[in-house]
Amino acid sequence: MAEKFHILVTRRIPNAALNILKERCHVEQWDNDDVMPSKQLVEGVKGKDGIFCLLTDKIDANLLDIAGKQLQVVSTMSVGVDHIDLAACKERAIKVGYTPNILTSATAELTVGLLLATSRRIVEGVQAVKEGTWGTWKGLWMCGPTLEDSTVGFFGLGRIGQTVIERLRPFGVKSFIFKTSNKKTKEFEDIIQARGVGFEELLQKSDFLISCCALTPATTHIFNKVAFQKMKSTSIFINIARGGVVQQDDLIEALQKKEIRAAGIDVTTPEPLPVDSPLLKLDNCVVTPHIGSATETTRTNMAVLAANNLINGLNDMEMEAPYML
Ligand code: NAP
Image (cartoon, rainbow, N blue to C red):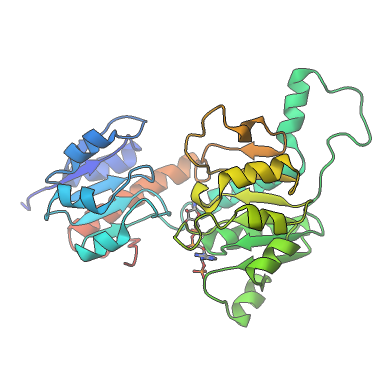
């Protein structure tokens, strides 16, 4: 019988995935819902052939070296790979697996949720009910903008962005515009019924601006004071990408000064966001705790895909979702 591989699982994960791994590997697991402390992570990776990690684990060159030359695969239960030093993996011929597609729909749903929560002031309204400030029905109270006839802009229009467009069409949005890394073809624009624009135009024209790009050096802090000042004072900013694409202090200032109307953010810096963060004191900001992919089915599917990626990678078989280095 083939010798079993030794792997580290850095968190408590759904049993469906853990069982796959246990059947084929010697599993060492941080059986906890909280992040594996760095000391334990450093100890845990030593001598392992594979690492099953989450977006909260920083997999840098130093950690790869500590793991040792036998390390073959890093499999992350996320579509974002900004926590992994991809160049260092490539240099060491370590394969990387990730979990695209299966979380797209869930994250698109949450994005629509944030659009509605901010524009229709749902959280503010619920708070008013609880605090007893809900008086009689008032004509001008708790009003906000509507998606109907609006221009919705996307910074990044990959799997999630395109799915958000599909979900939003029935709302009667007037136009979709986007900015991506690579210029898209006319055929792409026709199919998706959205128009590629420059960053300036995206900022100036969007009534709702959704950040759903990958976090890279080029997108880090791209939403900063200068960007917010170019947006309409009536616009709503949504970020479901990563906290790092936003210069958070600048967002706070833009919201406080009403340079933009509101923001809905699922990702922050740091995570978790400290409860004394000024963001949480703002009526015009809705913060959710990085729950884009948090449906029961999605999380199980992500874990199973990450487990299969790890097993296939270790056995020199094609991964279901390899990250192309
Ligand atoms: P994707 O299909 O790879 O799309 C990423 C998009 O970002 C692409 O359109 C890409 O442009 C664009 N992009 C990259 N660099 C850019 C730049 N410098 N300027 C403008 N656009 C740029 O990824 P996805 O599956 O849609 O996921 C997107 C991100 O969402 C992930 O990387 C992850 O960080 C985040 N996410 C968050 C949650 C959550 O729970 N909140 C859940 C899932 C994913 P091109 O099309 O030209 O390549």
